[in-house]
Image 1 (cartoon, rainbow, N blue to C red):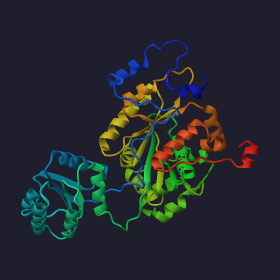
Image 2 (image 1 turned 45 degrees about the vertical axis):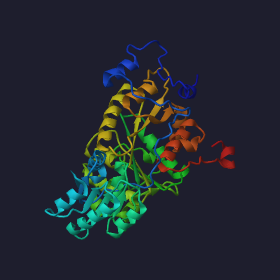
Image 3 (image 1 turned 180 degrees about the vertical axis):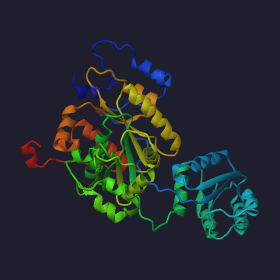
Image 4 (image 1 turned 60 degrees about the vertical axis):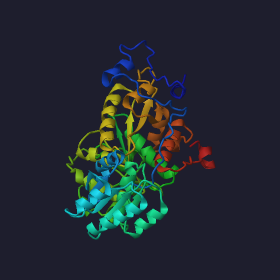
Amino acid sequence: MSNENALFDEEFDLDFNEDGPAEESSEDLIGQLTGPVDAPYKEVEPGGVVPPPMSASQGGDRAIPAIAALAFFETDETRQVIERVASDRRMINATLDAWPGGIPAAIEHLSQNPTPNLLIVESSAHSSTMLQQIDELATRCEEGVQVMVIGATNDIPLYRQLVSRGVSEYLVPPIEPVQLVRAIGGLFTDPEAPFVGKSISVIGAKGGVGASTIAHNLAWSLAENAHVNTSLVDLDLSFGTTSLDFNHETQQTIADALLSPDRTDDAVISRLLAKATDRLSLFTAPASVNQLMDIDAASYSMVIEGVRRLMPFVVLDLPHGWNEWIYNTLVTSDEVILVCQPDLASLRNGKNMVDQLKSQRPNDNPPRLVLNMAGVPKRPEIPVKDFAAAIEVEPDVILPFDPQLFGTASNKGQMISETDAQAKPSQAIDHLASVLSGREVTAPKKSLIQKLLGK
């Protein structure tokens, strides 16, 4: 059986060990790390991808300014939502305190305390009673406060009367935390502020799992097959391979921006970005060990935000490591892609990373899992269903061990979709690009000359 057929068999039995049984089964090893494997697992469809449960959002989320907000809730459900909003990564600069009692409690509080920037009040009262309470609340509020009301009924006449009284937003349960966060952002984001692109961080659970290869091919697929302007930022300063993989040497690299972040405005970043195609721009790494660059975490944030102001999609190729700037980048990214191999080290590290990022990003998608280099002959591997159950994330993409395809692409300075657009790894990367961009992906077609030359 070929590697490709072994990978995409419906049973997905990837526990190769042709020389006899291993000393310990993969299930025993997983149990040592995570306990019994009993998490639910959705069987992967043939083709190596799992359809996502959520649609992609266009554009990235910016942090909410340093505002002071007070919320007065009536129900336990709303209290829980507000608590989750208060801990959201986009609220890192803002403060949000919650108190029970609804509008009457807000009136009493503001009669003795200063008005916050944002006031969130919940009311299940009848429309006439609610409007009377809002009128009284207005006498306690200073000018300029933004008021958000959470009501019990979807009543358009009530909404119009609330707006006429100066209420900024009216929401009706059930409310998702991210919905409330974005509603707050809509009230306090400067309409003249520049658009920020969607940031996608790609990192490996351990070294050598092919995270950079995934990042580079994903960026290319977003740009050339999903047809969205994309920038690939190589943040592995000493060993980055972007210039090699794209056969694109540049004199200026991301180090030039990171070493002088205060002088790196949008115009400078635009000049530093190298055009690989009409839609794809590269921020290559110096890939040199001649200089030890001690760059603080704030510099990375400034440069990444600068690129996001210029490109709708930004793919961040992160080195394998765990320090302040890598952690901050992962937590603040719109999407995180974790690349693993079906082995024990990837499972242990990946599980730790997934748990940490889920706790710090409770209102975001969990990290997306890519299982790479699956089906290596004679190598014992943890079965996909066991790996997914233990790490508690279903794989979005499963890529087979295909040294011929990836090696040929690398030697030519091409992406795998350029080498063979119909190969299953190429289609899997295109699927991931479609999920992240919300666009249908169109595989490139070979011209007659390319077909004749066998390219």
